[in-house]
Length: 399
Image (cartoon, rainbow, N blue to C red; front, side, top):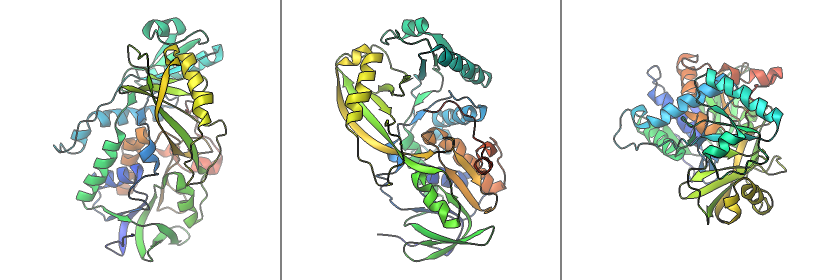
């Protein structure tokens, strides 16, 4: 049952209340220069099919562009100090960052050279990434089959996975306690002048005036932007995740390993996790979460058994399908205001980087709204202006 808003106007209306909507709402509520009224409109308050509910909650500093490295470094610091970040609230649990790192593997000399180049960029920006030969990797992680591997990159510092849903739950709860209003409803249209969104209309019929509108609609982002006549290259893409047990458990943690095939795997408590994109990685319907059972049998399992021979005897325990909010232009986020519709704010297109980037991006958007500029990390490289100009964000390390 839909809910009506308590007021007829808000300083900020956020379309979408999952990870990004709640991150932005909380950082706004915590910003000393913002005391406005915030409305979060969420179409499904169970979040059953939201990308937030299907995340693997991973975080890495192994990017090729300094701003992405810095975004993840802030994210790691934020996760490790989450209770302090939430004002020392004793109800807030500690969040552990399982730092067993990403292991990127290269099976060619060209791939090894590319890894060595990005390692130098990462090291120059304070990341602990090490470039390793196949022999060095084998000595550290004897369970790998390295016969077809030339080299790899690995970072054991602030890189791995964390319980991202704890951040989401507490951002949402704390934002509400600070006066942010969440309603179960949908935005169905917007009215605007040539340069400004004036109001949104809800599925329940109300028209609500706004100072800013934030598009935090996940894979549905283009449906929201079209309400003000803006096209953005965001579409839903399926991603499969598999949880499995091994008859022969490894004697140490399995880093989040990115195999040259594109399959990735890692330890996950007493089990292991693997995932990949489908071979036909094309746009899907917003409501299509149908799994492709052949991916496990024909693609993932054979690669697991090849890379880690101990995984020849494994049992699939669980699996699910989620949607990436996939930026078809360059697989990086679109952040900030539109140059023409200046109070329409994007928080879209994270293409699988969303959870790890949510602290820095949420903070940045709150700064932009509260002060009209970024105050900590300069996020202007993620502006929609690059898409308008046809200039891709130059990140090479895309999974």
